[in-house]
Image 1 (spheres, rainbow, N blue to C red):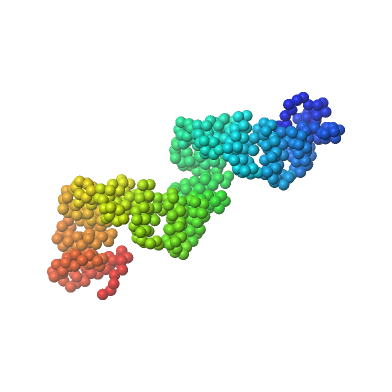
Image 2: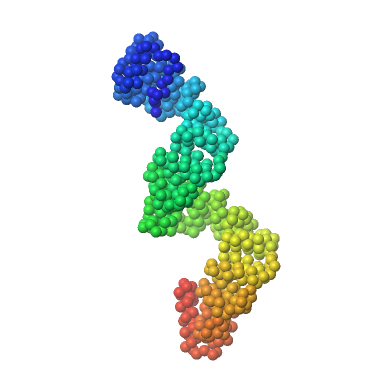
Length: 591
């Protein structure tokens, strides 16, 4: 914005110019315009200072009808006579396309003329032109140099921008301490952007000693000025209880203030709060509304992905795989790894898009640069030959990448590859290492595998006690194999006190999940009355279920008990087995 306040006299004004100035400062713009015009009419070459002020008055509509074109004409006259403020303001008009055609090159030329005379605003603006490559070839080093000239003269915008350059290592060597120092200079002048940036430095402990309390202090100053980014930051501090007492209601208030200004991060964060706060009526619907605002108005990739997930799950919106794929694609094309993974899986599973293994692999590979989930999925695809040529070497490569990033699924799968010697040298000790890493994450399959290694003494010192504890942990997480194994351990009294009732209980849990070996053993328990009252019909039922699921051992159990059963009992047991299969949605062929 052009401002008469920029009009400074370095030498005493002529009497006729002073009359115009006096009238201007008194608010008598018509008299000021008359005096200043007269000065230019009677002087052979006009007066640059008067021309500048006339240009300002036309720009601001003071004493005359606002007219950017006339303003530019007067400012040009003053600028061509070397008036720095006029040069800066003429550059601004070219920058914004006011009164002249927008021309970044002309803007940069006028900014440079003023900047070289020490004009602070022009130095800061020229820094921006070099940073953005507008009107000049982008040069971050020159950008930082011009910002520094203005910053050292106290310009708060330049101080904040120079802080950003040091913060990001653009045009200067990255230096968080320098960044914080420049942010502070601007922040203490009341620059809201700098206050927010300084708050971020305190929150992360970059260039300053980490302090959530200090972070909140600076965020609050900026937020109370209406700075949307700081309002979003305040929302985050209250949501997490950092530097302030955790308060979801206050967090929501700050997020909403920023969101209503169009801040995409706040709109997305507000959506997350509604999605996760299940106690709020219509939480998912409100979440979808805010995600959509961020996704549509600003193209926020995280919000687009979150909206896609709601469509995928049918939460807050009608389930629609096609819509889900659409939003995943928008985020994926911006390089958002989670969305790339989700889109890849949509192609893999044929959800909302035609099945396309080539595109599935393509999107998963893109996601795999940052996503351990995508790395794991690629490992599984290559191991099983799903959508890609079967290749265990590539499977191991992808599984290792995911495992090193902490994926418990990949760590468990890599343990299996080493235990079985698939595409790697067989090595039980390395298998145990990977199983252990996965088990520490609470991954049930790995706990089950590690339990088996301890029970058999493979890669570790044999220990029934450790095996039983690992089986129990996995069993409590619903792993059917572990439920069977801990049941056997209780039955035999290995690693745990012998307890037939607990054995039966665990075997039943595994059997109900379709674990056929547990179903066979459950038949034995009912037949022998071990841990449960003897019941030949129940025994026969479980033997039949096991047989229907392909367990060959159960055939011997059937033969052993059917001789002592009536025809009605046998038919009842078979009927109960078929009912179990139907209830568990397992197809059974009719004899």
